[in-house]
Length: 151
Image (tube, rainbow, N blue to C red; front, side):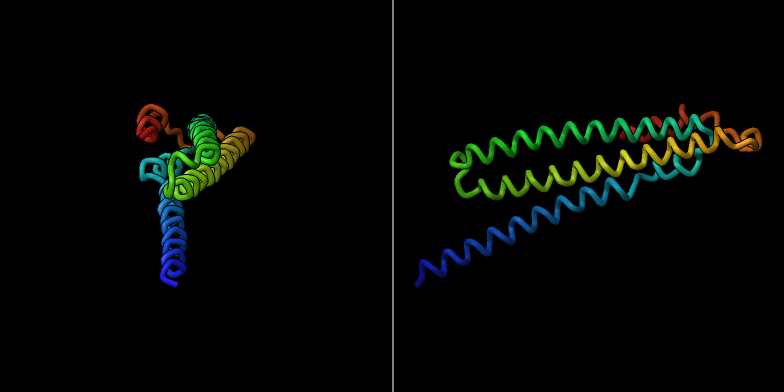
């Protein structure tokens, strides 16, 4: 009976550890979507098509980087699954953690892609606007604010 109880405790501990890893990874995604103050300022100051196109490019680049990271983690996950015997008791925790990272990278990449599409759409709407000349110009936007976004 003592061995059965010990096994149950280990299983419960493993499940709680995996949930803890998932929770910590979800906070990474929250940080990505919450936004940096410089990014928020850039979005608020974006009034010209070139401003929105620059933001779209930023989000596209960010999404590409995240897809690359997700691919790297998928390769690592395959390794953990194929060679789990090398990692002993930690194998399942490593697999769960890697899976959570993949999920978060993919979700954040998709969110960045959607943001890029929204900025391109906004840019095209501004270009179509006949009153484009009445919009205030933000000449220093690309030179001053966008470099701060590349943290």
